[in-house]
Length: 144
Image (cartoon, rainbow, N blue to C red; front, side):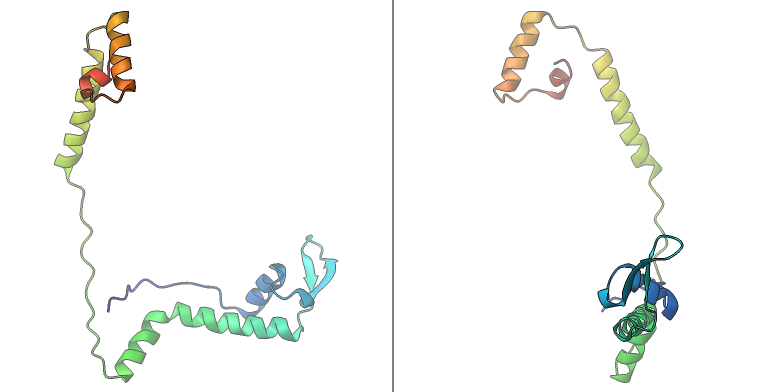
């Protein structure tokens, strides 16, 4: 099983979570129906249902913040052997690949700039072929 060591940083302050839940109208019975000085709905901080929801959310977020260490402890208690694997070094981009892509762009632009001009009848004929679904080369397509 692979587990990324990246962690989470969820807010776990009970007061902050309680306010977030109240302002999100998570527990409608906690809202007083009045606005505070900042225009936010005021709420009853002693609302039982709001406090239960806030405590559950704090516990949930706390466990998510420590998911890696909790998972390791669980597996070790069940007899699993944890093997930590170091992250691979970040692969640097291949300069040759970028140079080749740039070269292709430049060739396409040069091909368009150096293309011969079409007279009206040639243009109409090629455009009609294209509209019928005929396969035209990239060089010809750039002329249309």
